[in-house]
Structure formats: structure tokens, C-alpha cells
Length: 320
Image 1 (cartoon, rainbow, N blue to C red):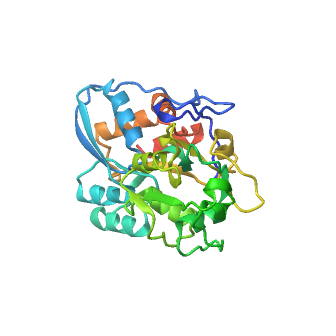
Image 2 (image 1 turned 90 degrees about the vertical axis):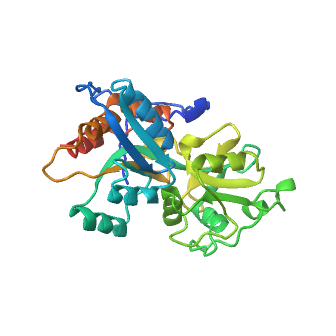
Image 3 (image 1 turned 45 degrees about the vertical axis):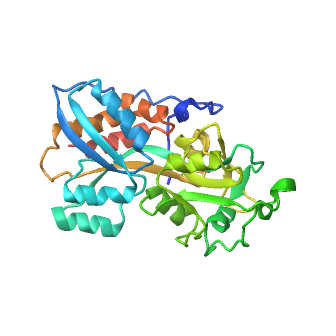
């Protein structure tokens, strides 16, 4: 997935993790302009990865429309399609694309497909405890750590010594943290790292991204994955290599732009948009805010990558 991004990556929670050449949000993006006096309630049900984003977007949006209230529930991307189908949510944040069977169920209910809006970019990060000396892993090594099927054909990995660590680390069992099956991040990692293989039964499944990072912070021998915006001072992010002998790269702006970092993805908001009917004002204006200069500044604040100008132009057309 090629990404030509004019953006910067500044991590969430004021973690001092600034890249060498940060780039600001593209100033060609439209600035948000208030439209009337919108009020009302809405629900957002879906991705846990996007909880911080949705919360910060809502805070910014309420500065224009203080009478708007959006309830945010993030238990995993797989909870978004049913909520949209059942009409219990107006926004369905997802850290992956809908599966064909989810789209089919949606189309069976409404007679048309869901509208998927790209909101931002994420570099999916692999975390270890801050005291861990390891710096880089290949996708095959990750597959051997997390998967019982090892479709990338790496030798079994159970201890940190199996990954080349020496001394006190050599005989220490690797403590593996992951997300639960409702998570889009779980599915993305399974597809892109494990080639749709099976997770080990020993993986400690967590209900949210923050729980993964918190677990690794307090577990010296832990490893896990989540959105890069969840980094804290208790963990460090590994560089990744597509295969043995290939360069180790981090999830920086430059490496996402050049497609060198292997675990990059869009984050989406899905909505119900009837053909030839205008969107509800609250839904349309919230999405216009997300895609505005101000909304993309929120993306940077939350630790993710803003959209490029060309993508924003294309996404805005979907709202008409």
C-alpha cells in the first residue's frame, strides 16, 4: 500500500519519541468552518485502537458544537459492522477493512454497501519491555513467537535465547501478549505477520491496546503488539525486517512513506450512507472535521500519521 504522506508522527501521552525530520500536517487541507448550530446524540462502536482518536476528535468537534454528544465504545473492530447493521451506532471505527461476510450482511440489511472513510494512518508496533536488549526482529521470528503454525517456516521460538539474546536472557521464557479476536489489530497481525496461521494458546489476550502495553511494561520478558500511538515510557518499539538479511526499519514517517516499514495500515470510520440522500448533519460535519486540517492535527496529537492531501480530497467526495 503506497502512502505519499505529508505528516509528522508525534507520540501520544507526551512520550518523547520525535523523529529526526518531523513533517507537519499538509497546509493544503481545508480548515474546518462551523456550519449552523448542530446538536444531538450519536454512538461510535468499534475499534479499541481508535479510542484515543475518537475521544480527541469529539473534544475538538464539541468546541464548535457544544450540544453534540457522541458516546464512544471501543471493544474491537468486529463490533462495528453489527452495530451499524442494527442501527445502534452512526460511526463504526475499524483498524482493518470489513471482511466480505460483514459487507454481505450489511448489504442484506440496507441494499447497499457501507461507506468506508479513511481517517489516518497507523504503524502497527511490536513492543518489548524497556530493559530488553533486543533491537530488531524479522517477520518470520515474530511468526514463530506468536504462532503455533509457523507458516513463515522459522524454527520454534520459546526463549529469548532462541532470538540470539545472551546472559540472563538466554533461558528466560518469552511472555507473549496480544489482542482478543474481536480486535482488528488481532486480525491484521494474524494476516500480515502470521499468514493467517493460528495464535499460540499461550498468548495472553488483552481487551485493549493499552492493556497490552501495560502488561509488557510490568513484565520484563514480555512482547506484544498494538498501535504505535500507545507507546509509554515502560516499553520500547522494535525495528522490523521483512526477512533475514533485509534492513531493520522503524515505523517512522520516512519509512511509512517509502513503504519500507512492513506493518502500516489505514484507520477507518464506516457509516451508513443512503444513495442519493444527504447525510445527517451531525454525521457529515463530524467527518468533515476529521478530514480537516484541525482534525488531522488531532491525528498527530494521538500519535498517528495524518492523511495526505490527495487522499483527503478523495474521502471528502464520499460525503456528498
